Structures are given as structure tokens and as C-alpha cells.
Amino acid sequence: MKFIPLFESMKTVRPSDKARLVVFAADERFIAVDSQGSPFLKPFSAADEAENLVIGSLDGIKCRCVSLEEGSALPEGLRWEEFRDIYRDLDEEDQFPVGRARVLLEWRRTHRFCGACGAEIELSETEHAGRCPGCGELRYPVIAPAVIIRITRGDEILLAHNARFPEGFFSHVAGFVDAGENLEQAVRREVMEEVQLEVENIRYFGSQSWPMPHSLMLAFTAECPDHDAQPVPDGEEIDEARWFTRETMPEIPNTGSIAGRMLADYLQNR
Ligand SMILES: [Zn+2]
Image (cartoon, rainbow, N blue to C red):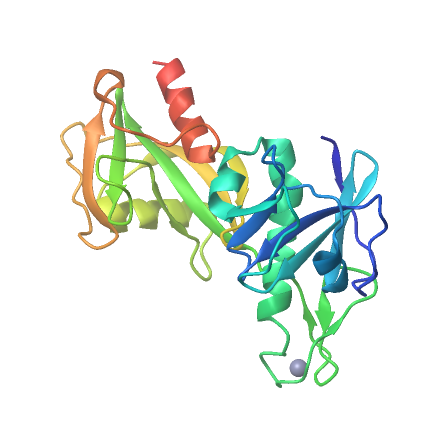
């Protein structure tokens, strides 16, 4: 599907019958899908009446998003799914509008008041932003950059088991960019904090919006110059980290995520 992001006044209007809706519930943890598993729905009455925002044009049709109360009933043929599960399985083209919808709705829900003076934020008529009538500050949707790093050493690749991962599942080291850091500093700090390794030859690989709730994953490759260094997991976020080879790979992310795409690239190029 061809998606073009659009901005329109954030005033709620009743969507036309031809519109497409992306519908969430329960603080955007759930998303409604049709019987084919698609999240791009035809308007229905419960969703028409709630506050909705334009996100863009989908194959030439106006697409809006809306967030309903937890436990809201859906018309026959639609069902609720965990947003995370649906997002992961969408191709990149379809991730764009759905991720954009989630970031904007989450921002609307969590930034109704100015953090400086407490006045109620008024939505801009000209862009996805809010202006504070008290102090005049302009507030934009929050996007939190995070780095994810594929560390290799010759034919070996370093993978880590996060304490929140299922048993036996490994991925790259990752973390949020800290205040004042540039991306290379964030890469070096995260790798040192999580597995106590030095890395060099840091190269940009690609990026992926990761709207859970509002991250932007920036993926890098890096090399470990020390041929004897063993990773030391931080024991909190990371409880195990090891060097693997193509022949000894554990369970890893699929290619729906940038983590999986970096792994596929490693496996193809060795
Ligand atoms: Zn203010």
C-alpha cells in the first residue's frame, strides 16, 4: 500500500465512509484488525464518535486514527490484537501509517498539559504539535532515539540475552540515547554498560520506527578489536552474553525488525 503522511487540522471530524481507520484501545496496547488481519478498517460507529486524527493518505484514501476505551466492543468480523504482535508482522510500508498513528495518539494522551506551567495544551492548526497558551511553548510529539548494535569479531557475532527475553532467545545490545550524547557515544556507552566490551569501526546500518511507545531504532554495526575479550553481562538488563558463529546461532529475531535484518545480513555475508 502506498502511504503518504499528511497533516490536517487536529480537530475531530466525522470520518467519511470512504476513509480508513486505524483503531487502538487501552492506551494503544491493542489494535483492531479485520478477518484478514489488516489494521486498515472501514469506519464504524464507536470509532466515528471518538477523537480522531488524520495520519495520511493510503492508496489515495484518507486514513485517520483513533484510540478507544479498554474493553470497547468491535463490529462483527473485527478483533483486538496486541499492537506489538501486529506491528512486528507488517511489512515496512504498512508499519509506517500504523506506527505514526500510535506515536501521535500516545502523545495526545500523555501531553495534554504543559510541563512548564501546567496550562492545557492547544493543538496547532498547522502541524502535529501543541502550543501552550500560558507560556507560548510549542510541544512536538515525543520520539526517543535508541541505538542497537551488531558487534562482530571476525566470523563471530556477539549476542545478548535480555532478562525480559524468553529463554534461549538472543539479540543485539541496545539502549536509549542519553542526554547530550551523539550516536557514536551512545553506541560505545551501551556496549560498555551491557557487556563491557570496547568497539570500533562504528557504521550506520539503517533505522526503524519502533512505536512502543515512541522509539526510533538507529542500527549500527561495530567491531570488537580484542580477540580474547569475553563479554561481561551487566547482570540486570542483560543476564547472558556470548560470542556465536553462523553454525552455533541461538533463537534470534525475525526480519520484521531491524535487529532481525542485521542478523540476516550477518548470516548472508559470512
Ligand atoms: Zn506552558
